[in-house]
Amino acid sequence: MVTEGLLEYVGWARILLLALCFGGAAWLDYKFRKVSNDWWDFWARPTLVLLGLELYLLEADLAVWLTASAAVAFASTALYGRPSLTDIKAGSRVDLIVSIWYLVSAVGLVMGAMSHGQVLLEYLEPTTTLDAEAKRMGLLWGRMVVLLAVLFFFEMAWRFRLLHGGADAKAMMLAALIIPSWYGMPFPTHSTPIPTAMPPALSLMIWAGLAFLLLPIIMLARNIKAGDAGNLKMAWHSFRIRLEDIPNNQVWLLEQMVDTADGERRIEISMRPMRGSRSETDVEAVLAELAEAGSEKAWVTAKYPFLLFVFPAIIPLVIWGDPVSTILACFGLI
Image: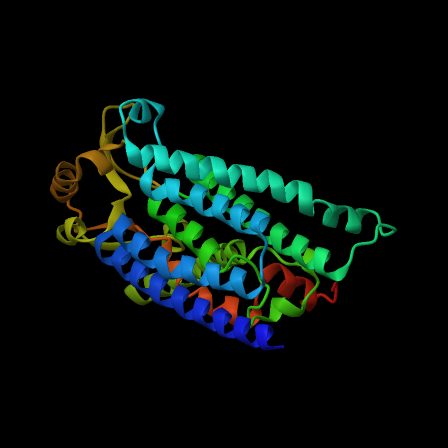
């Protein structure tokens, strides 16, 4: 009971840490469109303290500690890169030490699979019997494996451009380390069946994604107020501002002058920003051409920082927990 109470305090500390870290990151991303590695490095330290405290309170064995170390080692490459064999041969002590860390962590992961893999068989074959302590430690090891899998998912999401910015991937990796599982967290999902709950960091990303659904409503209301709702094709996702204000705002220009097949020049309006177009590479010239054609305003779409949606997504995460469990519960499926 004492351990459960302490873990609840750790859970609230994690929520506070997540709010402070992502609140500041959202402001930096909005103000400068950049969050430095120093920011993530600073907040990673208390994150690791809380992770270590949880493992200590749960009396984790060596295999669990080393599996958690493997997850941290993998996440660290997002900030510091991977050690180089060339640098090791050149005498880099840092690369050598980090490589040994990776190796020991990998060995620990294999040790965990050998010593705790039977817990999986307990669920696949109900006839298998394990004592309570073995099952508890096996589930703890499994949570560290899931944490490693979630970190790998965010790495792949960045490489395949599902997460467009490096800061977005680093943010979600840190979120996964701050709240590695639902266990001990004061969230509603803590009391729901395990199969219905996504890992906390994925749940946070889903809540952030759902926030994007409010944008069309906000944009349409803004354009109705401004009297620009006549073009419904554009009014639900973009807005018009004065040409002279465009260079001073974080927006993508959606208009440019083009030559038609019959030799005429006209204004072309795109639904989305065209990578590599003149509207992106030579904004000043395009604005000058639009002004010469008599335009005073142009359609633009804002460069919405992803972290600006992740930060408020902490609220539904704390109130409702996992969105998948919440939706299933609404339909009476769990």
